[in-house]
Each structure stands twice: as C-alpha cells, then as structure tokens.
Length: 401
Image 1 (tube, rainbow, N blue to C red):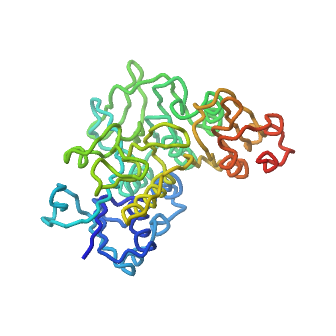
Image 2 (image 1 turned 45 degrees about the vertical axis):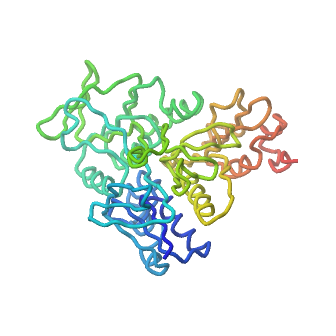
Image 3 (image 1 turned 90 degrees about the vertical axis):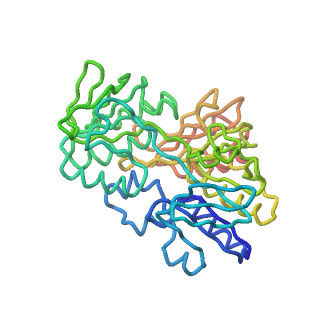
C-alpha cells in the first residue's frame, strides 16, 4: 500500500494529514510527533490558553476523533531517530521502521536557550509547548514577581497576561527598543507606552548575565544590576529543527532548503512550516517564516505536489499578536518600506500604519483595524493614492481600482 509519513506534530503536520484525505489520497498516512498531544495551535499558548480563557480542546487543530475517522495513524510521544533515503524508511525510538513513498518534514522549531550561570534553577521557563504553558500557569499561581527575558511578541503577550493577574512584571530586552527586530520605532514606542501604562517595567539595553537562588530562581543578574524575581520566562527567539534533514544530507541553510513546490533536495522528501527556508516570488527573496499561515499553506502546497500536482507556494506573509484588548495584525514586513502613512489615531488604540516602497504598498501594521488588515492583502504591491490611504473617510476599496 502507498504510504506517506509526516514527521512532526504541529500545525503543518495536522494540516498536511487533513489535506491528504481532502485530496482523495487513500494510502497510509502516519504522523510521528514527539509530544503526547494531537496536532495543535501554538499561537493561543501565549495568549488565551495561558490566561485560562481557552481550554485544551480549543487549542487542538482538530479533535482526536478526526484522525480516527480519517484513518490517520498517530504515533504520539514518538521521536524519529533516523531516515534511510535509499530504502525510503523512517526509524523511531519505539524500535519501529516505517516505509514511505513520500515524506514530509514538519519538524518545526525549538526555543533558543539562554546559557548563563544559574539557568538550570527551578522557576525558569521557556514557552513553546502545551506542557510548558501548563508548568508556567502552575508557577504563576504562586509567583509575586515575574521577569520576562526578551521583548518580542511572545514576551509581551505573556507580560500582558501576567500583569493583568496582579503580578509585578519586568521585561528585560537587550536591544534599544522592544520589538526592534520585527517592527518600526513608531510601533515599538506605541507598545512600550501601552505596557508601561499597564504597570509593566521595561529594561532596555540590558543583558541577562545570570540567575541566583537556592535551587529556585530568586534574582536575575543584569551585569551590575540585580532584579528580584521568583518566576522567569525566556523568549529570545527560536531555532529551526533541521538536525534530521542535515544528518541525511539534505541542503540546510537557516532551515531546510526547499524549492517553490516545498520540495527538499531529495525529490521524495518535502518540508513545511517553521523549519523551512523557502523562496517567496511575491517579495522576491528566500526567507524562513515563523507563522501559522505559512505552515498551513506550505502544508497544502506540499500535499498537492506529493500527489503529483504542480502547485507553487506564493503567499504574502501575515501575522498577528494579541496583547491586552488590542489585536495587532500585520501583512508583509515593515522593514521593506521606505515611507509610512498613518491611518487613524494611535491615541484611540485603533489605527493602521501602511508601509510603501516607491509608492507601492509593501506592509501594514493594523491595531484593532481588521478592515485595513484585510484590504492591505489586496493592496499589496499596488501603487496607491497616499492622501486617500491616510484619510479614514476614504473607502479603502476605492483604492483597489
């Protein structure tokens, strides 16, 4: 019987398995994931799942029954130990060897580790999995002061939940502004004011040099400065899981290198999600994206091509972040712009910043402005009237013409 094996248990893996059945594939489909959970969504972990607003069932991409109904074989709590490209087999730590006709690597990523003295103390966490968040929620119940290392989206989302629960919260960022690697000074300043206005302390240009405590963390060392904290959450980026691909000789460069069909350097092995370095013909460069839309769409493209199709991956990148009652939705990369246009008023917590290059829309940061976000997907790459773009009274749809 024909067989497709999916390595990984995240959103790309779950979507790929579902798409295989939707496309009419009747062969064996196997998902091998090292967590004990069915494929689930990661974005809610640092938002509504951490706060307790969402339960586990709402985090799952699809209920466990779906996989049984679709005869998708789930090998959970199982790690792939090797891949034989010539023999078309996958070996696991359970001692099994599974044959494949096509293989999808959806191995995702893992947190970047902060290796400093005391980093093995209890009370120091990373946030990537359901188990991580369960541990953080338990520790947060008894915590008085929380230190968050890293002023990116994950760190700020956690900060908004922790401070709302009454904890003293400090964000420690080594750069000169929060969100420095992902947005503009204008947006950094807006979110800095938002968080400090809610009671979060933000330390900029500050590097964590160690942790102190009697087995459990009590203090964060930042050079000569010391910060009291009985709970630490580290969010300093992620690292793509490329080890399996690298060990079998697949091309890797800041991710598993794939073509515009999501194929690796082995024609029978595809890859999707955070772990891939892929070409994007719309923005005209290669990149590695850490986003749900990318993982889901790459999974669909990979499946189509594994089944003999000729589908190209070409999507405008988009992202989102929930902090307090504000939803930030982003299209493209603000760093691609050479000018920016404000639509709305920051003081109203409802606005959009459009970024243009040579008069063409290349990105938007939309805060509580879903309409601007949706229209920007259609405006992307188009030359627009800057006066109309800035005027909230002008119907954005009129600019599409």
